[in-house]
Image (cartoon, rainbow, N blue to C red):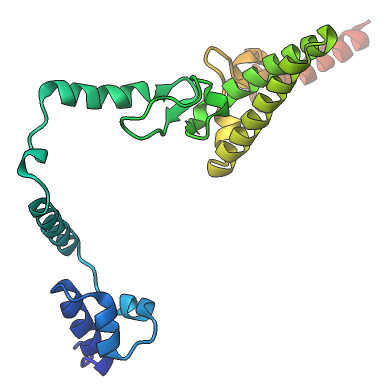
Length: 221
């Protein structure tokens, strides 16, 4: 048998009914005697259907304040443009997070762009880019290209920062990330070296047999 409801249960039901009926939460806080609105927020139960209902009602209210011709169905060309925007946000190292309707602000220098979200699978590619940039930095220093070296230093700073952020968000990604076409350590290891000592056909398993054969040969001599 469930326990009888407490006084706080009734207060929570009351707060939920007030807010979900449209009463501003700060007014509900005053009625409940709460000095902090966050306390009232903890009393209110939020249901998904209430979120949708209130948001739709808000949109209807806002649209009544705007000219009717501002709200119309999108044309096929507009939908194509909208989809194209998100297709263009897919770049080699991950995804560009720039908002819809805004152009690239960094001339497609993605490594420097704060909008770039690095795909953890491309951490190996960042290592390749770093190696190339370091080599270019050394060449610039030898040739006396001070401006070029300064620009490369800035790019390296952004690259390393993004790599650390990506590794921090996905701790296991660094060990799993390899550039396309690279082989794992297991793939580079000869099959014989991957056999376990318990395998009678392994190299380790054959060593005692060969040693015994040598001993028997010596005894026969």
